Length: 314
Ligand code: FAD
Image (tube, rainbow, N blue to C red; front, side):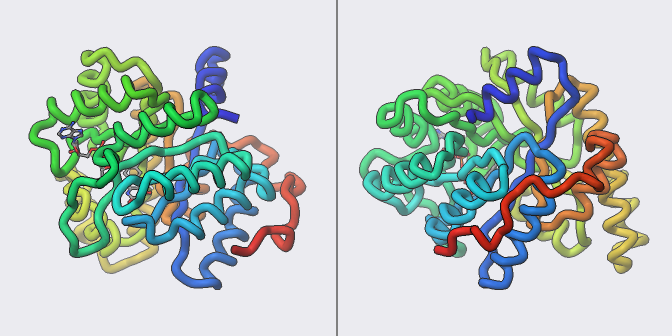
């Protein structure tokens, strides 16, 4: 099913806020096996959808497609496949979309992508330069078959000439046929509130789903937020400083902070929250438990998925 239809139905019926989970293709075979087991377990949480990243420059394309196929067909999960248009030909894009379609996947997160590490970004060939071009191509080739999500940046994209320009460019992605926006991570919910106001003022009416990353470790948090140039409120820096060497305390703080952020986002009217899981489950589950968003019987429920021995290996 299309994620946009699922979201709109929940909004129409005034249902409790939903959640979705992002995963990335692991580097090792053991990692892939662990991920399938995690997908099995986490499907019992009934996320509205899960999505799988597309490695920089298409580096994980085969595995992304394989994980998406298995999540959609064997784990009972509505799946969204990320797809980038950096370092990829139109023929390869179509091949990936054909494969996704053949797997029954109806949801694509259309992105420009980043260049492989250490390389500067250069405009694509064959007219695939920005995410807007990819959205246009998907609509031109596949009509309404896919629900298309695009990325939004509450603090502005790092390469944008200005925050205002970035919102204008977001609008062109919507005009090209995108259905919803999933945001970059952030830690200041007031920034998100202002972002939504700016996006709405620009005439964009689609659902905007905030992306949250529960802090799972101090070093990782530092690395990720400096990579994305995320603003960290003083209160968070001050709370982390005295506990930064205690992994368990950092994780627990991360859960409490994520719960607080999710409550604020839901109070602001967000229909759901998108979790950057980093392929880990505990912090996400604890956050959802704390928010009382999980169905009561999730722990006892018989697993609704097929055994992952049925899963297709690439
Ligand atoms: P675009 O929307 O094309 O924007 C890129 C930049 O170009 C922005 O600064 C924008 O303002 C500017 N721009 C757009 N149009 C124009 C124009 N006409 N003229 C001038 N400037 C313009 N990366 C991956 O490699 N794989 C993933 O799976 C992945 N998943 C992601 C998921 C989410 C939710 C998010 C937020 C990001 C993800 N990324 C991923 C990172 C993303 O690829 C990078 O942030 C990338 O640099 C921008 O992608 P975009 O789709 O936002 O680009």
